[in-house]
Length: 364
Length: 151
Image 1 (cartoon, helix red, strand yellow):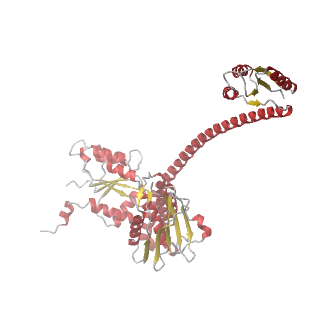
Image 2 (tube, each protein chain N blue to C red):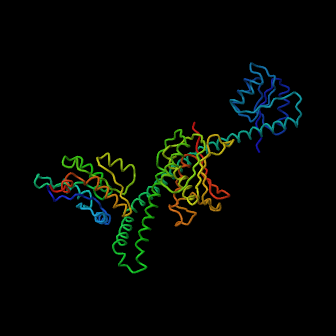
Image 3 (tube, chains in turn brown, red):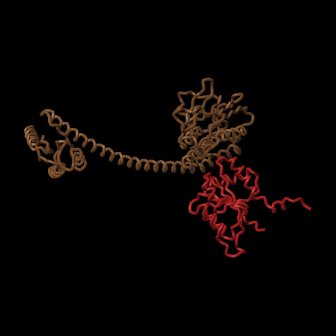
């Protein structure tokens, strides 16, 4: 290890000489002795020592404190102030500690700078990568949309010709075969519904949102009214509690409520009556920026083991023949809520039925 | 009255869709006459191509059913051409497309379509759509005259 170079700033010559002797004796190099603040600056600039040992009471315009400030500011030079009774070992210890501390601080500052640089680079890379992924996703969705759209024409052919077969030639078909055209047609019609649902699901992503203050209770009442009107003969008890306003795109909110309400109604259609409630959870202390609303029904509920499948596209927990639909409704609801920065989840009710919770922002 | 023009000119590139359309007319017990062309080029040829002299000019169909997405010249282009020519400026054109995109609907009306009908997949739904189309576009004073009781 090469010896550190020190600068002595001491105006009393005898003390300075003694100090110099002791330092050299301990293996340090001394680049010079300055008798004043100004002289110490000059010597420090010239020789670039690692440390300065300074008597606090030195002659000249600049006192010890000011000199130390100047040396630190201009040359990043650490300074130890000497008292007249510095024990030998204590002095050496102080010097080593000061040098070591200075070196550590320098390394720490360098490390911080490197981290800051890496963070900036990282953020830039993340931005670029996110843009690439979004472009790829948009391209894939575009392809899916095009394929789905093109399926309609051949589906029309399958459905149409099987219908003609059924209505014109069913009598000519041997017994098991006479129901085949209806099965073919049914398959085509189901595929057409899947295509419709897929296309409207993809549209949810690309639609522009215009969030405003919305009276969600009024929207829920309208939605329930429309839904009940489409199912005459199905007794429904609808409750819409007092709900705080939310911030949402009104058209998209209507779609969300329509999906959740029709879901509730569908799975409680065998109840006499079906009971549907739209309400709000009491506000959580830590989340004052959102409201958590819910749609509750007294229907068949669901097995909580399969809760994670509820909101997947085309996933159904019931047997497909038992209930109409393609399993796209809850996936659409989820997509809508997530586009509005909310969350959606569900819990089965102990008796039977289910509660679907969703969070929406509070208006600013 | 020039009887050589069909009631409906169907511009449709899919042969199965076109054939099913004809079956639908039969199913509806419709008396409308129909001509089918396979793309925009043929459509423009028939409607605008040979208007050299008034005598040789073919009479126009009573309504055009126009598909949108066809090879060579698409429905939007056909619409533009039809509205740009005096001869076909006021000819009823109904877009009959399997696209349910709002943007396509808006563009069709912007270019001068009289109506936009979504082409269903199910055969029975197609029959209903076509029956409505006939009611809206092919019931004319002429047919009322034809059906009037004898004096």
